[in-house]
Image 1 (tube, rainbow, N blue to C red):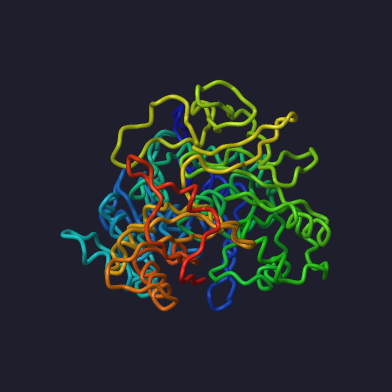
Image 2: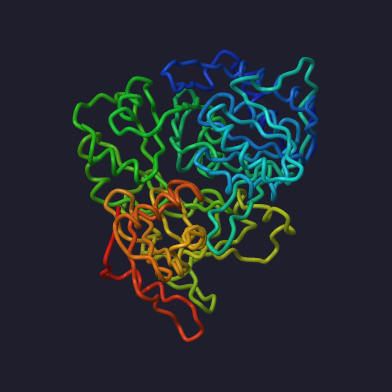
Length: 510
């Protein structure tokens, strides 16, 4: 069929093309929670996407509608996203760690036409749905299967600028916001697939990020398939030794992990048995990776970990380039063609300042925030302070705002603080980052108590559990410190820099 200029549909133009060209080649290998393994060819993936798209259409999903998923790293999650894109609809993948409050927020803002959920996630989802006046329909994919239909029509001739994906931010300055990406974002993954992730046709690529996160949405299967490689999914919680054993058993060639996972493996697993003959490439993104961890992997495996950087709004922006000596601790250089600059407060080029980009040069730049007009404000300021050395390599120095980077997750202090002050014992609270050897940083809460409450380890643990249940578990404060008052500016703003310094308090919990 002929394709109009500017038209692009990932399911049609990538998946269905591969199904025609290499129908029997492996596309997807899924390891279930019980350890069973199933492989799907490109032809089988395309057939499942077509059947599911027909089922979605029969359920009332049409072009531009949002389909929300609450499913782990499973083949059903992939088929649901492909079917959604095939229809010209918009996928909203959500993390299974979200709690009812977080899920309800996404439901209200995105107004999905349908929610697809795994059985283990249905109870939390139903608690969220109960908070809505007009909740959407939901399907338990374990009890009822994915919706399917026969005689699926051809994939929609979507334009590269049509919305395809919504990923919510971490709420650094307020509530989380939905970032809208287009079909062109999916197509644009070919740049980082070629110059950073690096899988090759016939290889198996494994991005371990949980479904629902930005890195997973682009690297679990989209980027590998643009490179013609196969993708591995593993529906299991992280275990350092199991991670290595799985990579060895399945002959993974490209392993994409968070810095925290690399740190934990370096500390907890045996790296000296040489059991990874197929492993060719290690990549990392989400936060800076310690040089000492990189040295441990290099000594054990003879492989460098290639670091990179990106944001939910931008997609991958940098990576350690092939053919150049790896600089441990650097996030590499801008991807080819990406216009990134380091600017001072006056917008002038500098060697140490805020990383900014020209959206016109970045094919994975977002369309805009959900419910807002398309972004048209010129240069994008990332809010991250970086240093550019004489060779053009970029080095992350920290956030200009107060976002907490922990184990690859971007955690907004506002969310943690809001959860804390909901507790009757808390009068005021501030959430800041505290250094951590494995996670890079963890959330530390500095709390002022209401009258009648006494600081202590029991109350600290109670507040931790309260935050776990009020928001996603990874956001809870691993450190709780009690103070009489919070340091503030004359205008009443909290002096977070002072709170990051070592301090004393009558109780702390980890």
